[in-house]
Image (cartoon, rainbow over all chains, first blue to last red; front, side, top):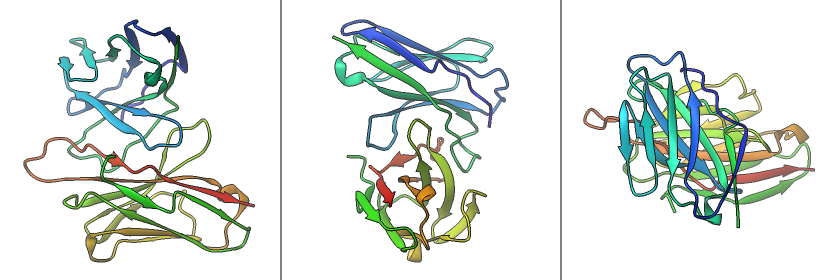
Length: 111
Length: 117
């Protein structure tokens, strides 16, 4: 499983677009990039997953440059309810048997 | 609600007592995972099952910990002779691993918070 580095914390304001970048220099050919969100006293929740270029769903977008050594989770027009910890994970989801979580990024949305 | 349920949500026990937690995964999921999470940290992998077979155990899982998944459905995690250091959130997750399912996306329950006094 590739090691990831992401900011420990970020602050933003309601209505803003938030971008959280994750570095994964040792990403392997078969690795996917997955983001989870966790609210206090709840389990992590899957947000989005991608391999290359751009992926978008109803919650977020994931931008992955051609070298795949980093990725950016983009949350459009955040609200107070987006305050949570966001985890970036990299691994071969077809083979890896477990998820290795780092400390994640604590996103705090201000009114 | 992800469809993964854990019981109880909270457990307070005295040091030295045994505790057991239950996890009911999403019904068609063949993989079931247990994680432990302490304050300010990400979840740490403990063990996982594919159907009823326990395929991997973390070195974090001491001899006092045991997990079962009889009949490949629900799972239980038992901690014997609890210690204060066992206080944490215990998370269960499930996923479907199949030939035509490309990605191992895990769905987590809300967890059981254990406090050992």
